Image (cartoon, rainbow, N blue to C red; front, side):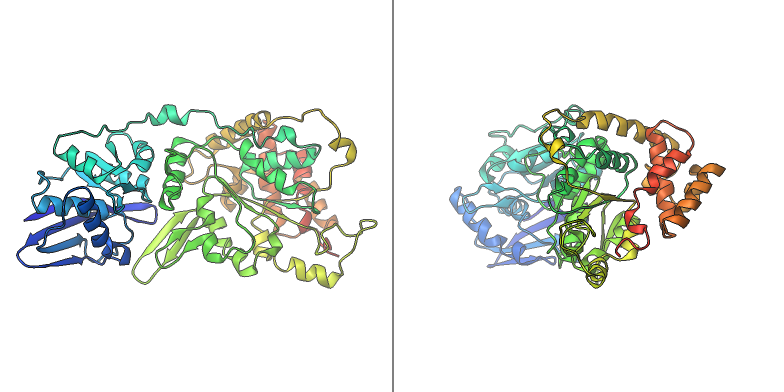
Length: 511
């Protein structure tokens, strides 16, 4: 007897429906075809034990299982449940033959319980797109799948429960979530709030500008100056994610199994990989490609602490994602793409000794040591970082002050007003949402300067020996400063403030 059951495979952040055909005929054998990997091939042992432990059995006949399309690689243990259902139906042990409106996925334990899987959200989204009415998933994945409206998602704890449901003995109740009301709950950033930061008003101002315009930022300061503490608080002042952004972010985290029992990820991600991270762990890849840290930071913040400690070749792979806001991983037979629109926040010491040069009483680094230290960060990478901020240690008077500084919510409100201005300004341009994304054409259109602003910028570039690459960055940052001030045109004071955020572009900074 032939039975068809439907599962799904995830490639990139999209899913593809897999048809699992189970045929039982005379003879003896278990044949699984359709390019399964070892984890799929081993399913026969898990299924046999699970069936035995819930009172059923693997039929002692010739079982042929085809996973179509047969030219697509199938990987993982998530096909255990649909294969088991197909075998039971084809052998007559399950009194249900038609599964046309159902999509089933789950890993089986030997006792028949169903274990969580990866990639739930893209699987359910694709199932809805293809017209399926019901999706049966592990219990731990039901919240994640139920975010998708217009399709019934059932959480399955045990294979026996699913059998009883199909035979109408004990029905499983579908899970429904109102995504809109779930999404509108306030994020809790009480653990990391700018009100706890003593002093550093100029740094907080720079971070407000970075958040308002989506600019990448580099913090330069000695150990203990608060670089990491400040960086961890940036998500608390970023605008809340839209429902579209939350769904896309959850899809990426779902692929690596980080969205179980969460439902929808509505807080902007903050990823902080260690400096020993490889280029593959950063951008993604592997034999079966998985998203890396920069894709997990999509719509959020990627924090690289001690930037010069990362290997140069690791940092260089950031250049294309920072420019294209997408990572493309190519293999011989397929290509997958992962979105990677993130805000880069990096920190570093000003010198190998850890301290600013010429600071009284502290060890100094030679010009040769400084050159070697700074050479780890290439010019093209620095060219993609809009703000370079020097962070000095907080004086004792500020540390001992018990009064609270301005909280994150107040800063966030100003950021959101500036972002709204940018969103309305670039509404007609696809893929442009904030100032950091401006291309050369839009830069000329929306960052026009009057004579006094032009003269100020020219004088600054001449006297401070600013490099040519600083020009566009200063214009973008000054556009954001003007937006924060609710000004339609860029004024000299906006240019003046933007100029001071280009420390590393000053010729001779390392000498």
